[in-house]
Amino acid sequence: MDPAALATLRAVRAHGGVTAAAAVRHLTPSAVSQQLAALQREVGLALTERVGRGVRLTPAGDALADAALEVAVALERARAACDAFVASPAGTVTVSAFASGAKLLLPGLLDRVAALDGITVECADEDVAQDRFVALTDRFDVVVAHRPDGGPGWGADVVVERLLREPLDVAVPVDHPLAHAASVAPADLVDVPWIAVREGFPVARVLDELTVRTGAEPRVVHRINDFHVVEALVAAGHGVSLLPRYSTRTGPGSGLRLVPLRDVRAGRLVEALLRPDRAQRVAVRRVLGELQTLAAAVEASTP
Image (cartoon, rainbow, N blue to C red; front, side):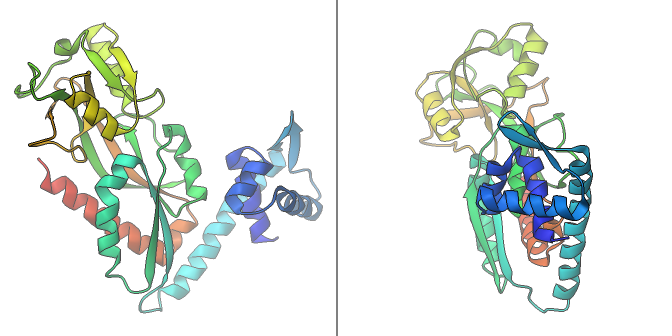
């Protein structure tokens, strides 16, 4: 069987159709259909079926897609076995990160990778709802993702490597009554105006926990995902927010203070997601190692 066609079958399943799979695989929809048709002729079974205007995999297609992942992993493991005999394995590694994670980690990663002969890193910022991070592993070798403390994991289809845990603090203007508090309790935040992220994004789950603790739903007045904008709104006195401790600009001139939230475990887990086959590449593992070393340094250096 053609490994490329097997990869296309997996992409159709992961992305829900021929057109989306074509975009990920950098093919035309016609080429995707041709690859699927060739696979079906080879196995003698229907691998896809029409659902409305789209397609989905049949049970036989699902079984073949599962096996196709094992094939892809085996091929990359074989390439990695050869790369192990090369003094400096070379290649381009693509890395995506959500916006504040990119701000926190990508500059240092590029500095560290510059010392690795033959390896180039290409970066992109991809800030998506939590249930869309896994799909990004079809487009990028390493996906820096985040999820809330205690939130659901990423599933069995990806390799997950821990980077760091970043606390989420309550951001208030410097002249706010809570600005100089050592910490703030959920009860102190009842009926204050909140600037929150959109539903489905990891930070939003902490506000749900505040509702459970206080019995009062937070009064959300704005929903904004760009933390730079949130910082500006908080500093101007238009509400309070939850902001990540390591990547938020504080100090003189920022106009805001971060106050730890007590009695609620408020934080996010920052993790690297990799497709199992791509995780076998030596160049990818070297970049991942640099990313983990950098993340450990960030975590150790920030109180």
